[in-house]
Length: 482
Image 1 (cartoon, rainbow, N blue to C red):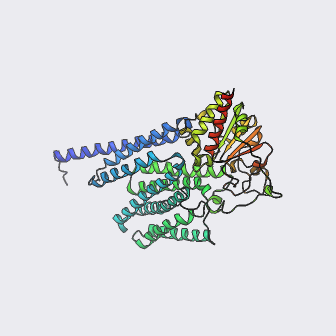
Image 2: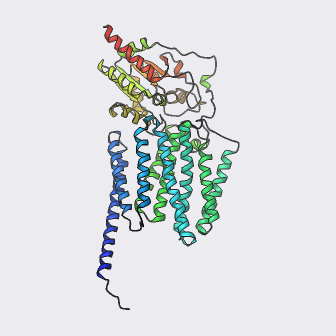
Image 3: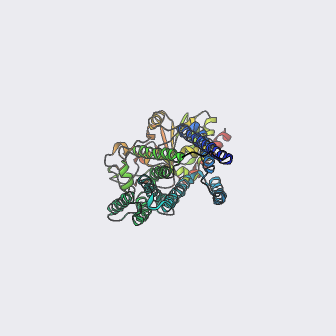
């Protein structure tokens, strides 16, 4: 056969298509590089803002590259989605309180996973039984983890938002039922890979995955939601990466792999920070009912209280103060009042540090973000437990604000305690300990905290924001008195 020369128009079209492909791949390369740089920057608190900007720029490149795809028939629905998403997302992101960020992230995960799941279902319907084995495996993996993440993230959102009880919701044989459903879903997965035309197996797998997201998260307590949200983030990343393999999108493969690996590693690290196995977090129903450690047995103990006037006197003249914030500070939105107290102590010559536990709050870095929002310098944060404990040993005053389990001595002293082995702060090594909490209840673990009954511990009951505000007033009154 003799090859006929291309017409001028055809040659120009081919050249334009080639240039477009190059631009798309360059955009994807830039996006991937920026995602990696952003993730690296996020490892340092001082560079975290830059990391978010780099990641956002990477996403912009990824979107631009995708919009240049020659396979797009019409931009009509893309523009509708863009306008609708912006109209809903921007106000939500701008108005959300930092204390509500964990549930907002869980909610966002649900929509990201839903997008991946829908893409997988549509692609399966489009290709039908003619798809190659590799594509069938990628699509099945995508919808399995995507659907599970959708309902799982919604359950996590409900628990964090307190629309659902934070206590584990369990039933007899719950783990056995979950394992059985997962096994059936995996069997369906294999059936679809072997025979892509088996639509019954595909949609059964999707339905089971949606159901598993509910049944696997409901039995997990609200205090474990940081690990769960991080794990669901990993699942969403894996689903996105599988989507990339299914539709041949390189940036989805890279971004999804980064998210999947990062979320999984973070989940493991957080489990270790609580001295609990991954399996215990997912299947242990930890915090389901209050329990008493052996150290809490015997005659009932009474904690000692102190007035804000007397507490203000000690805080005002302390040379070194260490503040240990917990979720109670976030709930009370006391971060700005805390900063005001911080500045007041510094003006009087005192040094102020913050001991931030890895699992304090409701998501990784929750309290770091809240304190940063209040304008507290990262240099004042002690995020390593050992470093914080060394500073606490020489502190004049340790102020516990809404924290409980992360300062419980039983984690080191009582082998019968469910907290035993968990790395904790040792505020009792400071000269004086002030504990600000709303009431006499226990922490998430349900165990009593012996710290509250120690000789150098004094309790200040009430809303954290109100108590800190009263301390500030009393310290200012001392200055006026002089």
